[in-house]
Image 1 (cartoon, rainbow, N blue to C red):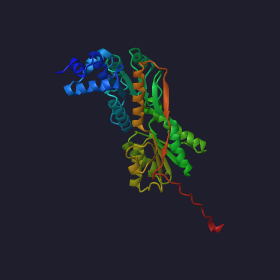
Image 2: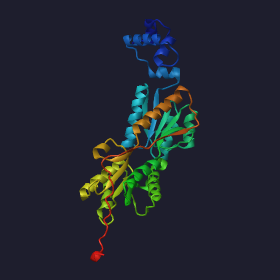
Image 3: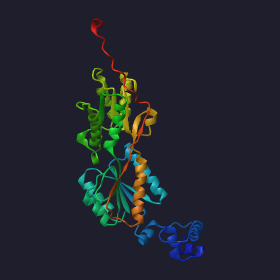
Image 4: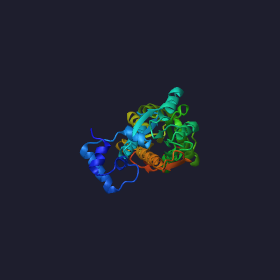
Length: 347
């Protein structure tokens, strides 16, 4: 098996120069780096990550903590993170963090605080000041996705603004009987996503001078959840809304299917908006607010790599808020005019 000394001898450089050229740490002239890489390729030499870690103090591995791995948003964020890390030559270690105290403590105290990762990306997990400072004391930068985290750089959308935009689109089309199918307020996600999307809906309705009493219907944020609740919302034609703002696209998909089952035509009888721009949104013709989870993952990796390059484990923190953008498709249209009652006796 070839060693770094063999690579250095073939390339005509010192072992230290060969090591710098292959690890990417320290200055090496471009022609020298190419010569060393060519020699390593010719000899079939593969640098040991463990050996490199001993020299550089880095594992080339990023820890990602996440509450769910089987939900669309989190899966898309992970794909964005993984692609960007692979392009930068980094590995990824995934940790599924639940609300269970002992399990969460084990992850932070044993796996993350020791020399197993160079940095941490928290996806949809609201870290405490103590958890962030514990990681930063061991030289590990922390970047978050989903909401503000103390002393850490974060990337998120403004959930209040996004839901307000989706509701205001329905209002602009002349709808006044609008319902919101959203997350159960007793089962909040971290960063109070359910509550913020409800608040955005309420602000838009209040600004239009419309009541919000009895207009909110809680459900699980999934297609089956949206389907089950939409059957109840649309089941009574006497109180049926003309528009629905769904807290996420999967709830909106379920709502569209429920409307079809009940013979309610979208968008003639019912306009529907969501949040996400899910990969199936175009297929359903859904008008929605773009969340761009893969881009959030990419931006998080870019932030982590900048901190690693400057050895800045501790940072003042700052939140990057991605702008809300509405994509209009065929699930929304102008509200049907309210028929004017004809006076009895022609009066």
